[in-house]
Amino acid sequence: MPELPEVEVVRRGLARWMIGTTIDQVEVLHPRPVRRHEAGIDDFVARLNGVTVTDVVRRGKFLWLTLDSGEALMAHLGMSGQLLLEAPDAPDEKHLRVRLGLQGGTGRELRFVDQRMFGGLAVVEMIKTTDGGPGGLGGVPDDAEIPPGRPEPARGEGPVEGEYSAEEALIPVPVAHIARDALDPALDVDLLAARLKRRETGLKRALLDQTLISGIGNIYADEALWRARLHYERPTHKLNRPTLNRILADAQNVMREALAQGGTSFDSLYVDVNGQSGYFERGLDAYGREGEACHRCGTQIRRETFMNRSSFFCPKCQPKPRGS
DNA sequence: CCAGTGCCCTGCTCGC
DNA sequence: TGCGAGCAGGGCACTG
Image (cartoon, rainbow, N blue to C red; front, side, top):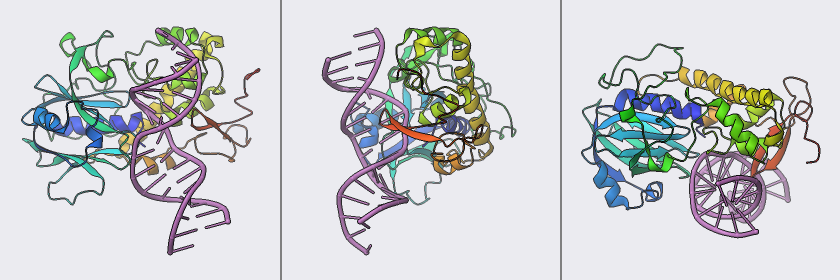
């Protein structure tokens, strides 16, 4: 499943190859991935034909292409979504859902492939943000005016931190309620800590709440909690500031490391990351390690069901809070 | 407004 | 070899 670092890798790939291209010949092969486009498939197609891509932006796991029509093509990869740039004569993927022809680029077409269809595409309106802009990594890349096919960025290069002007402080309507994400340079840690202290809920539930901080999924939540040595049910309002700062820093670090790894496989027209095999090489400390030894103390990692999903933690390093 | 629950989807794996 | 159960989980509708 693509997590935030994978989505960022996809964003960089799309930004490099799609800015300046014009969309034509849109083909929707399955209605479900377009279900969030409320005006229907015909309207979806009509709004994309002939528009030019001006930028590729991300917040959390939402990704969008800004269009010269003033709207945006918003994408969420869900659990199994992929955005691929491929030669038009390449055989269709088994789960190809939407095909978008591109003019003025490298002769490739954009394909949305999604087995489980939790994700999807929609053409949406942009509104002014109340928090100063899309933020996240990307925004308007510093080399946005270079046409598609620009030279590959140097390997090992750090995240390209986006800049945005007042003019670009627009965000797709469905993303407007999503908080800045963990890798956003403009994330206000003090504000976030204050909001966490006001919540009466468990720490993991708060980390997964996209209106507080976005981009943290089940895997990275467990990894961050393991690093911070905190149990997932620790009540947020009882955590002190140093502890809150620690868990947020750990969440950011785990994602930065994953992005650094995900970025190494990014070159040429390869804009997708295979999430499944990616986990294996990522050196996880908690997630998926039930019964295996904790990398700190050797205690067996436990798995518990929480919020209809699994939580992995070390019962010694991350003791359950009293009274829970 | 806030906290918490359940559902959407498909395909793979496991046990019998 | 068949087959059902369990599992994966982000986002959102919905309830209290």
